[in-house]
Structure formats: C-alpha cells, structure tokens
Length: 114
Image 1: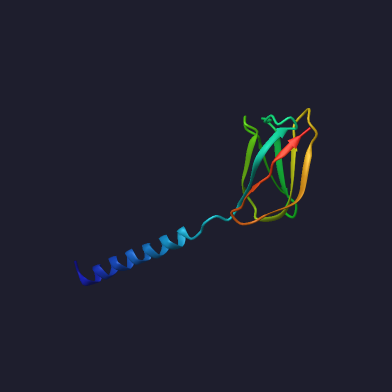
Image 2: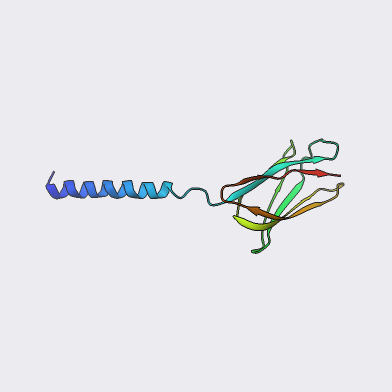
C-alpha cells in the first residue's frame, strides 16, 4: 500500500468511529403511558378505547386494551398537558386532565370503570 492509501484508510476508519458514536447518542425522545383498565368489581376489561390528547398541539393518540385489560400508548410527545379519556359501551367514561410526561417516562395510569 502507498502511504497516501494508508492515510486515506485511517481517515475513513476514524470518520466511521466518530459517526457511530454520535448515532448511538440519539437515544429516546418520547414517553409512554401504560396501565390497566378494570371494572369496579376488579375484572379486567378488554377492548376499552383509550385516547390521549396533547392539548397544546392537538395531537391525538389512541389504543384499545388487550385481553388482560392492559394497554400501552408509546411514542408520546414529552411535556403536556395531556387529557386521557377511557370509554367502552356499558360503562361510564372517565377523563383525566393535566397529565405531564417527562423524557423516557413510562407513566402508569390505571382506571376503574363503573
């Protein structure tokens, strides 16, 4: 190899090392809300609709509960306030307001419907 080729290869390897470390530093930039929805009797409620409204931007996120009554709303904007609404036919709708999320937080928010 010529000396210029060796220098060129070293430069490429150094650039790759620098870019790789900057890519891994990107990390998590969102938050999540998760929890369980149950009837007042304690039984899990599958198929419950959960919506989270980011009040300042109007962004709306939604999901339904799984068979065990649990849900996860991932990739939410950090900050708030959020308004979270839980509803299913045959039960009284519940709404919680003024919910704020921090970076990489997994907020546990459970509901008991009557």
